[in-house]
Every structure is written in structure tokens, then in C-alpha cells.
Length: 544
Image (cartoon, rainbow, N blue to C red):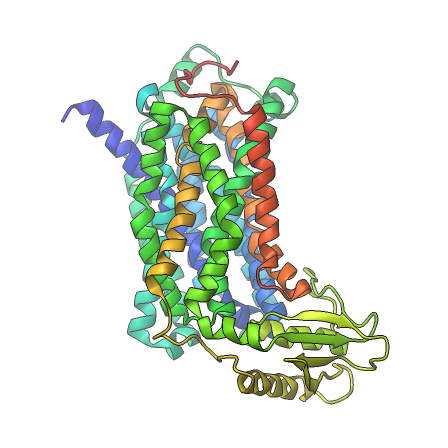
């Protein structure tokens, strides 16, 4: 093997390992959101606690664009290597810290505050990591293999997910579910220390990007990359195109096909968490090579047609695929919803939106309490306003099953008693308490998830090369990182929380899919009309 090939393999391995490690850090939080909601948000009801956990997951994405600007500016002025080396160290430290945090039961409201702070640090660090890894690999690659080489960076999402869920699954099996729920959830966070050491060791072996070295030697580095990126229209319009034409679709597609699938299987279809982890890991292992395959394909046919195909496939999949998942995961639940539909009969003005990110609102109306209980049970329902009603009631199969309660009636146990009565009524009407393992169609579920990942791979496999090729070298780190982390962080990171809130509002477990569907459709149309083909562009030249 030639020295150049050996060097390229080291570059890809070091960049991929570090980015996969950061993916691992992020995914363990998302995968453990249900447990974390009980540990850090124990002061609110179950449904609100889960929304808070999802919002805390999303908070890390809020700070990603800030990290992209700070680290991007340093990367464009000082070099690629050192900047994303610092970013990964910061990311790893925040992850280990989460595994050491005291819970709500130990220090009260300071626990969620510390958790949010750690997530903000994670997001800030990741803002400097991903763009640096893409650019570093791209600037070492020949034009003919750039899609293939940079696609390895895109596999890190799948690798991080596989690693995170595998560690969680093995820890659950060894410890048992009770011990894992009690304190074992900390282990996946603490193990990231070992991955951090390995990632830093690999990256210390790397040298600076040749494109940056050449640009620096001839005095072409930008003195003000933030200004040149956002206040020069020819550069700003490319940033906007990258954001709205590509990356926002990547964000919602990825989090729909990964985290929303996990939420759907666990909380809606009532599949045991360990089984869900196994299904997602199996699907990710099968489909992970597709990222490299589509990256290599884009070297032959172009970036644009492959990426457009990925978005189009996901649009076709969204609603039908989740209906297939529901039938494959818990057919008894689907039959119960068809045979015994649930209707919330409420007085006028009794139902609230029930989405309060600041955690200050108290939902005490009879409608809100009824919807919270149904949301916690993970069942579909519709709402009918009855002018004559004095208090909200729940009808199952056209027959009133029970009246709701008021949260401020002086009886603190009323809500808990109501939830127990509701679950009993649902069970009597044929609603299963959990999915029957013998009725779960495992191959169909894996096939659906593989199809999701196929569409994601078709979009994101060539995307790393396309983003690097869109921007001129002197602002590449800043201009590439910002739209990527806004698209992934804001559009994608908030997807689980937004979808869950829409479901809580409508009572339809599929209604949350309208958010990613619309975002993907808009991105597809923008890319179709405005996105140029970039295959073969020289990375030391500005785009046309």
C-alpha cells in the first residue's frame, strides 16, 4: 500500500472516530430521554417531564450554531486540525459530567439546570467538530473520490447510534432493568471517557490540511471569516441555500427515522425499551454501509440527483411507513383503536395547548388532565366540544367510561386515581398494556427502519462533499458549519419535542409527522430549483 493511501486511511479513521464519538455522546441522551425525564424532571407530571427531557435534548442543538461560528472563525484563521481537536475534548468532558450529575431527588431544581448546562456545552462543542472533520477529509481528497471519502464522516451518525444503543442494551442485560433505571443509566455516559481518550490519541497523529497550508502561505486566509460569510451576499446566499435546500431536510429526516421511531415504538406501541434498542441497532448495522455507497455513487453521477432521490423517498415513506410500524409492533393496539375509538368530550374552553417550555404553567382543567392521562397511555383519541358539558369525560366505543377530574379540587390523589381508572377502562375495552412479544413482526420493523436510513443515507452520504464544494476555502469552516448546525440543530433537534407536542394537542399519534414532511418537501423544491451541481469542483476556488 502506498504512503498516500495509508495517510488517507489514517485521516478518514481519525476524523470518523472522533465524529462517531460525538454522535455516541448525543445519542445516549436521546435514547435515555424517558429515564432522564424521571431523574431530572420529577417535579411535574409524566407527560410534561418527557417533553422537558426532549427539550433538554434539543437545548444542545440551540448552542450548536454559536459553536459553529466560534470554532469556524478559529478554523478559518488558525487551521483545521487544532480547532476540532479542542472541540472533541470539550464535548467528551460534558458527556462524562452528565453521568456524574445529582438527580432532582438529591438537589431539586438545580439538577435540571446542571443538565441543561451540560447539554449546552455539548452542543457548543459539536458546532466546531463536524464541520472541521468534513473539511479536513475533503481538503485531503482528490475530486474523483471526494464523495466516497467524506461519506465515511456521514456514517458516524449510524456508528454513534449503534455504539450508544449497544452499550445501553448490554448494560441493561447485565444489570437488569431495575438497577439500570435506578443508577445504571449513568454507565453509558461515563464510558465515553475511554472513547474520548482514543479519539484524541488518533487525532494527535494528524497534520494540517494541505489546502489551508497553501492558502496561509500565499496570504489568502480570511482576517474576518464571520464578516465575509454573512455580510457578503454571494457567500450568504450559498449559506441560505445550504440551510434551506439541504441541511434542514437532513435534520428532520434523521431525527424522524431514528429518535421518533424509538419514541413511537416505546411510548405508542408499548414495545419494551430493550427490544426497541435491539431493533434499531440491527437496522443501523444493516444500513450503515449505504452512506458510503451513496457517497461513491455521487462521484459518478453527481451530488444533486442522489440527494434529491433521498428526500423524495422519505416523503413517500413518512405516513405509510409509520402505519406499517404500528401494525407490525402492536397489532392488538391497532385493532383496539379501530374497534373501540376514544373521544374526549369537553366543555367549551376547557382544553389548553399544554406546551410550556418554561415549565411555569399548571394544567388543572378536566380536559387537560384527561389528555395528559391519555397521552401517558399512548393511545389515539379525538376531542368533541359539548356545550352542555360541565366537566370533561372520556367515551370509549361510544359509551362514557369515566369523568375526568379537576387538578385544583383539593384532592392531590385524584389525578393518580383517575389515571389508574382510565388504564383499567382501556384494558377492559381491549387496549393492551404492552406489546405481545409473540405478535411483534420483527423483520417488518427492521425493514421499515432500513428504508428510513436508506433515504437518509442517499441525502447525507453525498452531502459532506457537496457542502465542502459549495464554499470558498477562506470561509469554508465558518460558512459550512453554521447552516449545518442550524439545520441539524434547530430543525432536526427540536423535531422530537415538536412532534410530541403536536400529538398531545391533536390526540393523533401520526400527526407529529406533518412537521418533518413539510420541512422535507420545502427543501426538496428549493434544491430542485436552485441547488447547483458541485461534483468535481476544486476546493481552493470560490464557487461560480
